[in-house]
Amino acid sequence: MTGRTTRTTDFEAARAALADVVAITVTPFADDGSVDRDTYRALVRRLTDGGVRTLTPNGNTGEFYALDPEERRLVTELTMEEVATSGATVLVGVGHDLPTAVAAARHARDLGAHMVMVHQPVHPYVSQDGWVDYHRAIADAVPELGVVPYIRNPRLTGQRLAELGELCPNVIGAKYATPDAAAFAAFARDAGLGRFVWVAGLAELYAPAYWAVGASGFTSGLVNVAPEVSLSMLHALRAGDYPAAMDVWERIRRFEELRAADQSADNVTVVKEALAALGLCRREVRPPSRVLPEDRRAEIEALVKEWAI
Image (cartoon, helix red, strand yellow):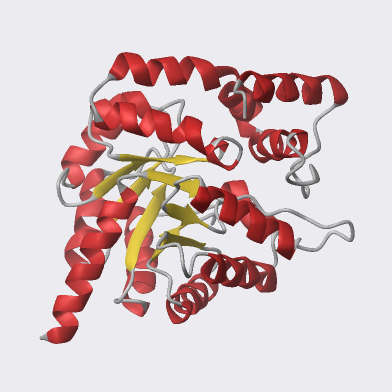
């Protein structure tokens, strides 16, 4: 009885943490190309000191697919060490083949993480039955953790998430990242609007539209650069003050459009370039991402200066 009560309480806290700005942490690299541990720690501290309460190590902005398994474990470990005294909630990104995803989820659990975000399966042949099976296997492996599928497949139906939720009570939310607010509204209602916490997975540019039809949190890469900007949008949305939210939207519009251009080719690079302009992180990324050309670097620096960070 005690164990069940504890898990329920944990899920309530985890659900509340998803209804927030979910920071996708960047992974800085040192001169030798390895993960820069000290800089990573400093960036995490900057987020928590800036009021950010929910962090996702090993997300796409963290170059998840460019890290090897040991590096992904390291990033998780560094995050958990840094948030130990901050009270922040950690949602660890896991994925790849099923054994790798399960091992990563168990590693996150053993370190004391609160939730795992399951990256969209990258297999070229993804059936909807197989999608349910993949996520169920991960959720069943870590029943103590909240599980949040990362939904990028526009063909997936809300009924399938509802099915997964029936099978796995610890599937508590969804990071929805298909760029169609009407599709999201329908998906959330078909899956269960109140059953899951809905996180707008396309960051600040989509947050107001998705919030209007059911989201209560949003992910952010920009928050690495300007925590106060992202939090100001959150506060406006929570207050139902859409004009204020759109004022923030206008401030960050160009930055987010640069990240989204050419099918998000420079999604990570733009964030790291902004951090480099602030002297917080080297700009280097790993292929298939690229370092920005000189003219684009100057534009990013000018945008950051406009935010008066």
